[in-house]
Length: 80
Image (tube, rainbow, N blue to C red):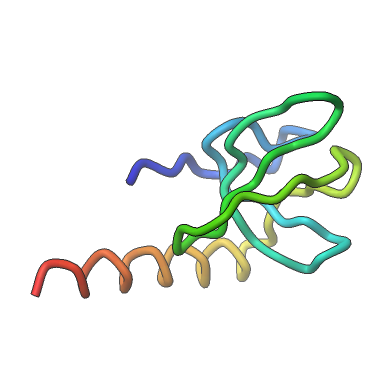
């Protein structure tokens, strides 16, 4: 899985970047934009959800580190 790093210089995370839906307090990967909504997927996979663009924000450094560790741990479990 390829996940781009979130940039603190962008106002909104782009497709493929980790982001947080601040209303749902969920972290996911931005998958696309359609109909005025942002589609996000949980970092461990699963069903996508729609978020209002104003509620999709870049992760803090701590949140990004935690999310990347979750991704890394998930990838290592599949290889055993």
